[in-house]
Image (cartoon, rainbow, N blue to C red; front, side):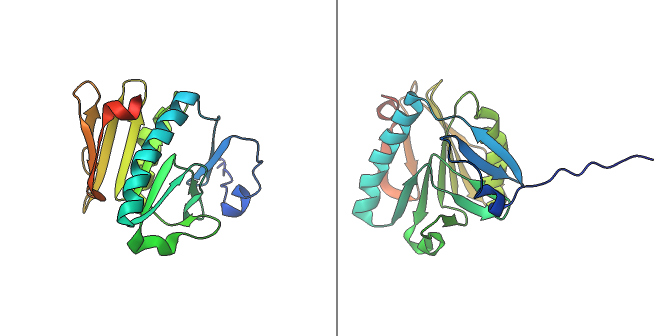
Length: 186
C-alpha cells in the first residue's frame, strides 16, 4: 500500500516567526524561499530605479513607491518582498502599517544568481495569478529588462529592453516618464 507524504506548508503566522538575520524570507504557495543579502551592484540598480521613479511619483502624486524589505501579503501562504513595488493612489487602501495587503500595481525584481529561476518563473506566475498589472525583471548581468503587462488573458509576452539597443523604459502607470536603460545600469 503506497504511503502519501504530506509536506507542511507555512502560513503568514509562521512567516512572522522567521529569524531577523539579514536574509530575505518569502513564502510562495506555503513553501519557504530564502535568499542571501543582495550584492552591491543589485543595490545600486535598485537605488537608481527608486530615485528615477520617486521624483516622477512625487510630482504626479499618483501613488507610493516601496523598496525591499517590504512585505507583500498576496494570500495567507504567499508573502514576498519584491525589490521595488508601486501602489497607485487609487489602490492605497491595500497599504497598512505592517505590509501591503494585496497585489501592487507594479513589482520589480532584480535578478541574481540565486534568484533567477524563482523570479523568472515562480514569481512571474505568482504575480500574474494575483493580478499585478506590471512586472519588471531586471537582469544586471546582460543589462536587460523584461516588462510583463497584464491583459485579460494574463501576462502577455514580455517586452525586452536592452542597453545595447539604447532602449528606454516606459510604463502606462507613469505616462510622462521614461528612463534610458544606460542610466539605470551606471
